[in-house]
Image (cartoon, each protein chain N blue to C red):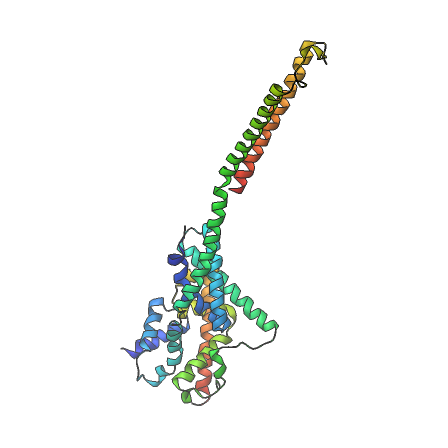
Length: 165
Length: 168
């Protein structure tokens, strides 16, 4: 190895004019023994750099950090599983409503069959409205309110499901 | 989408050496690398490439390590578990130093540099990174990298010259 070239490299190293490759060459140069005194004096610097580049974390670190990462993945998977169940909650809610309505209808029919006291007597009804048009409008408005209420409840449920997703 | 084993875990040694350069504490450095990697993983949806993962990790690792030494300094306690502890004979004439003592003396020089110089010297002289990459990792200009490295190397050179001038 041309020592003159190394001396030049060293000068350029101190002035930050060397490339990464030239600095690697310097570090490799100092791996050899028996150098002239003027070059030997910098051995500790480049040996130190070589030595520090070898510092490593062991396999145990991998295991430790991977177990921590798995914990976060399992947690995320668990959350996804909960979110995935939302359509079933929705279906269950619909079934519950239909079932309740069914029960209510069945109950009202059975009451009509078995109870004489509850027999409808249309003759005894009293009109609450004298004008059929007003009565029709009142009924239509009441039904519309019920319909709007159901629709907005449905939209709110969908929105909340989208937010959770 | 990044993969932990391929994009994050391979950074462990570089991050460990960086943390160690700043904290001079092996146990703490290991904890810092672990914390850095967990944070990177928690932000995995935000990375576009492997290089942005490294920049993120270097920033987090550096900040955690600086926080650690900041806390240590505020508590006014000495850093423990360092290789430096046995290097008290740093003023010993250079030629009388054994190889091992010489490296400890250099270690001490490195650790005495200001944080910024030490971090840049770590990335350049130990990790062998080009100026442009260091600038990207530290979010500074290439010029700032060169100027800071120049000061650090000049300081080291002066310390070597001081030993020569003591008539050795």
